[in-house]
Length: 260
Length: 260
DNA sequence: CGCTAATGTTTGATAAGTGAACAAAAACAA
DNA sequence: TTGTTTTTGTTCACTTATCAAACATTAGCG
Image (cartoon, rainbow over the protein chains, first blue to last red):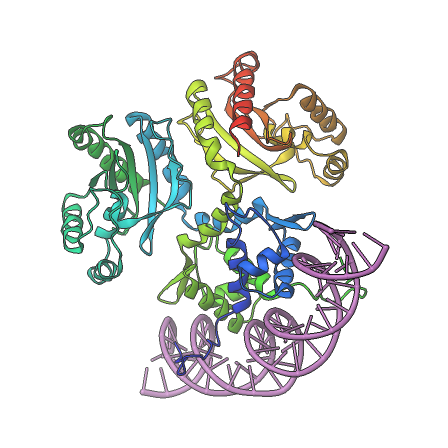
């Protein structure tokens, strides 16, 4: 890498502001503002109206937005962008049948996640009609420190990266049960590494009991985590360990063998 | 719109090439090339290496790609872009429990799609362990003309847009049963409009029998289609009409009432 | 109706992005 | 080692995008 930014105000010569701003424009459409006028977009992204207009016209020409009467909204084509990530994970097709098998045998939702920064991100999910209709679509994020999948993935990190995570993460008490002390979290993660699975009770949400196992690729690298989530009133801790863990570990090995 | 491009070679003054190219760079990562070197990216997108490098460094700085030893790959953050579209559809959360209900009662996969151009695009899906482990994730596309959901959505288009679709679509015979004559397709679509549901038999894929109904928002506009797909050997046409259609139409109305 | 206020569109000086050419560093073979 | 090839990084005249401010167009309102 070249040395840039000797002065604080200096801009990175290799940073394409136009592109970065365009991506922000896409992301600026959300639940609160599903459709926006040109001026709305300009304000929300700190752009001049002239600039906002160019972004919107470009997106429109590419089919990513459509305009009904001066108001712009995203089209389903935007999903293509996210889809190209899923396509690079050659395993997301492979794993679905295995996850369906888990769902079928245990009668609980099954998910797959990867680690991105301090979050786990859902890459696949088989929901079942449950007590709590949780809505965690592909792309959804949850904090890694308070989820079973997060701990499984953190346990697979090299020591220096785990260290970096622990020193930078802010551990909010999401429920009274959430582990918020870095040292305690570290020993939990070490335990997860030894036992090769993780059960978390109500640390993310009251009533939620989740079990996760790592899934390895053919080079012995953890590539994602598998999870089954249930309710404390439905599945005892004892049953989770006796019934859920073995099945999930077995399926994890089957997936490894089936991966490309 | 202002008048542009009097001469053929003229460029659109309001088109941001940098942004459009950047989006292409993201899309250029796919199953065949999940990780690429700088040169690969340059070749695949017809960019100079200098340019490709700027795009990759920008994406890296934003966290959308990471580089392991000179090879670049997308990160899960890319899903955020697609996710922002789902967020603008305020209903994708609302509908999941209803779809789970359908899946539970009928024992078959249930999907929701919208129309984008000539395709239907999946915005939600509840898979079940079935005969054929189909892999249709959120964002996946299928040709509208050969799917039950496509016909339901086409039936809801204003006459001029339907006309435009019929005259521009290329109707490939995907199976021996596929309707490929525009006139026949039109009358099929008209029938779908009258009966308010669509059953398609093996037009997309041999053995596949699918049922679709439209779902309206509170302003009597069709906003998406619900679908249940099964196998001809598992569900008779008679049962599909007697059992599937009424339940799906009932759930469709419940969704309308529940929409924001 | 005219007036105001807001939004959308064009314009010209300034800033950012571009590819071709060049430089540097790997990768590979003899 | 040395030379050859391939890939990656940098520079710089030229093109594109940007902002601010002008102008044009609507929308609202008494």
